[in-house]
Image (cartoon, rainbow, N blue to C red; front, side):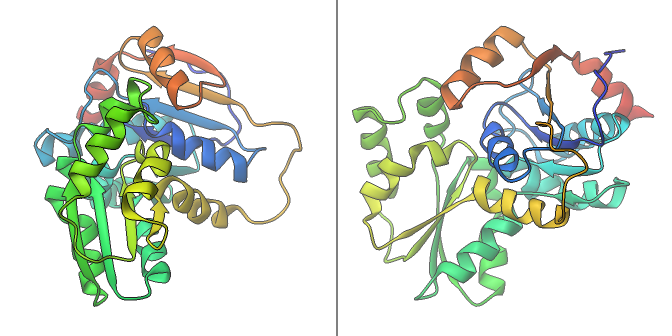
Length: 271
């Protein structure tokens, strides 16, 4: 079994890859004295093209592993897993669970002036209608667009390139009049400048990483138990060097990277 360094009541964060690091970074800015355990399931990325039940099984196994480390809060920093697995995780988990979708919906509801909200994300997230159904239940009009190539653009370090501008313009070209746009993938905040340029200054962007961090941090009000900087440990099911290389594009990794065989997650799930 993988041996984890001792952490003090860490907050568990997981994603299918490195995109969730934007959520982790936002959390650490708000909770700098907390310990964190991040799990990037890079051996099985991407989740967006996998069957929903498979994603649920992956998420449950990861949650069980993180709970086994003694986390006292679980953050699903993956839009696809939040869309399809959150109910199962909430039912199963012994600790509070927060995904990235409900905070984004709340923020968009507050931000919109006309009631017209757009959502962009992976095929899995958009296909699940998780954002759209929640927004429409509040009486809002929605437009959505899957943007599968944007993750690759970000991970290749091309977020501010002509290629990213061309892709974003193409994906958003058929949008109706909206005044708010949810960035429904944790990679997309790194494309904020390009996306804002494409939609115009009058459209408000909702950054799922920031609003999720705001929601989670509200559960930890009060003075910290220590004023020492919190520790971070990263568990990676794929190649740790590849994880570190791609993560450097998003902002780097602060903390130890520990290889984690997928078989340990499967074993936990089967118990």
